[in-house]
Image (tube, rainbow, N blue to C red; front, side, top):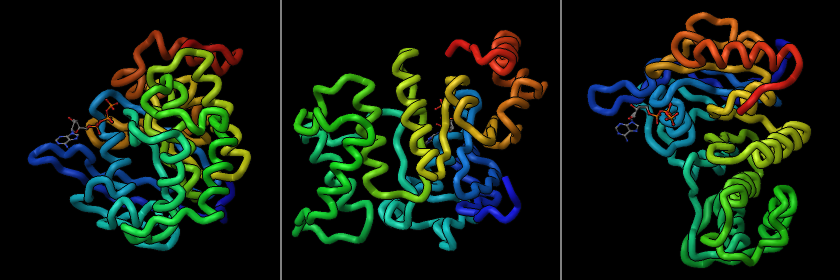
Amino acid sequence: MTDDTATLLECDNVVKRFGSLAAVDGMSLTVRQGEVVGIGGPNGAGKTTFFDVVTGVTPATDGRIVFDGHDIAGLGADRICQLGIARTFQLNAAFESLTVRENIDIAAYFGRSRRAIPGIRLGKDVREQTDEALAFVGLADKADAAVGQLPVLDRKLLMIAGAIATKPKLLFLDEPVGGLNTTEIDHIIGLVERLKADGLTVVLIEHVMRFLLALSSRVLIMHHGKKIFEGLPTEVAEDPVVVETYLGEATRKRLKSFFADGEVGA
Ligand SMILES: Nc1ncnc2c1ncn2[C@@H]1O[C@H](COP(=O)(O)OP(=O)(O)OP(=O)(O)O)[C@@H](O)[C@H]1O
């Protein structure tokens, strides 16, 4: 990573309180163009809340968030998406009664520019973005299926397709492989590798360490709303505080062998 790489996102001392609980407690993060930043940490550490604040799902209590030259703290999720940050959710988020294609059409239509309702008219550009996103994730054959009938992997792919149909500059993935088996995890690793190869900047949350460490160029570990570690994937299991608060000794050993010979369980 060179020093002159463009900064895409700058979060400075971000705080989110729910009553007396500081779910995010002074998080700072810089994301540069083309990076894949992985965020880990125990349940309740504040990872999703941090995503929610940056993507406008919930407003920050305090702090500065600048994306691509825009001060986005306090903007709504629709506006932030239109500026170029797309995201997926930990749990399935889709219009259940609509088809796969209709879901992606909605993302492509509303995710790029301000639109008025009523008056939806899907232009050629929207249809092309939808087709492109469906083909990219491998859901073209299921374009007309009702979302409610999809298996777990396809539902994850649907969320990713919706996100990339907005043509983002920065993609946030919240536990993209939660609940998937090993083969399915490998499938999503391949997909994120292709997004990386296309130059997309990605920030991801994941508990599955082999996913997090295989894809990330830099890793952050959160605990009690704060960043307790930031460094290279190879350094995570060497950090005594991370081992103590999050990984445990068994995972530390598995990760050491992962970097020694490329093998680790989920
Ligand atoms: N809307 C809310 N109101 C009150 N407390 C909340 C709300 N959302 C989250 N919290 C609390 O904030 C803390 C951080 O939660 P968050 O979901 O961000 O953690 P996380 O690191 O993403 O956890 P996990 O890995 O389990 O998804 C938790 O204590 C949670 O109970």
